[in-house]
Length: 454
Image (cartoon, rainbow, N blue to C red; front, side, top):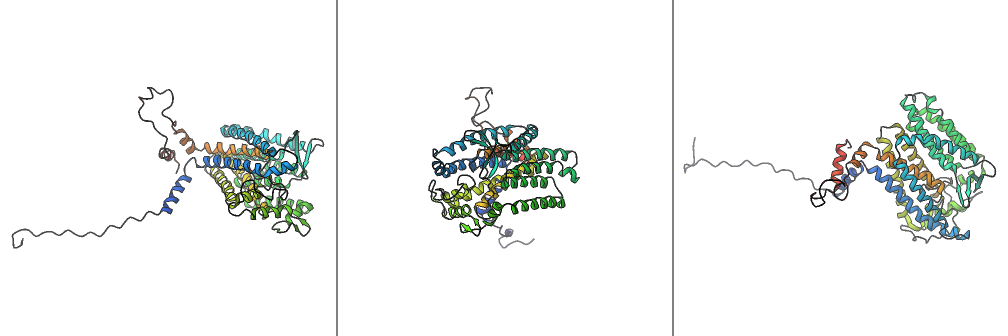
């Protein structure tokens, strides 16, 4: 082995390694999307969306009812807060119903299906009895409870169809009977047509449309074949065309779609056009609460069917988009609850409630925007009307109960620790227990992962 002139071994040069690739720069948009995706996938996301979204819609609705109904109340020689007080009382009662429904077990919900259906059919038939039923705006769908309080039984028919239809389809699903078309249609479709007939006797086409949407939603969730689904849809569409053609009032409403002048041909489109005027004058952030001009007698039903127009005028585009976002979150949460459960009744009931609220919101907002005919249905949880608010809040309680009943959500709720220290009854004094264990989001997320939630 040869060495160097100095007799020392040659120096071994270090092998140059290729430079390691630099880590990619952290994209804040990608990081935000990742966090949002993880937040959507948490077990209690649907629970918080349903609870928070419904409460926010109800509270904002109370504010807008107070603002939109003051002029109408003064024109009727009533106190300015008259309609607000009635709506607040209905919201308080509805809050109790929502809390009770959210704490009921699924078996109790199924047990209430038949009593609610029988009560709704009885009250809807009682509306047609002379001297008992009342006519409001040309529709005889009301029963007077004494004084200024009235009830609209057809609103409870929506809840009855959802609960009874979900229980019926779930029992047939358990017995493997849904593969036969007669078991899928009977007796669901005949009972739905009975409710529709009682509603149409009073002339309420808007509520009939919502009930039809609930029926189609239940059939779709039950896995109805395309031919069967299209057949029922064709029959319902044919009946709807006949009912519209034979009513000059409904034909006039259909002629007001997209109208820009109060007088559109032979139809009087005053309400539809002034609803567009209200939305157009709101701008981005509106004229401010209480500063609406259209509610001073120009816009009929400003605090009921067209409260969304007053919202756009006073709160602007920001306010209307906020309302739309809340309804979208509520609909997403309902679809998530229906899609993640393994209980057939929960799937059908959650899907029915989501179809009900979403379809009614789309029909109301579409009419205000001039995209759909005016159907005379209120905006759920938002418009004035206790008869519509009470069953809707009970239905929201159903969704909350179903969201809490998910396996991952139950595990996440069970892993929660008390906010201040340990539970009462633990040994030792408060000074000997050591540091408090706070219920952090990281521990909740790990609990959700251990429960099988992705």
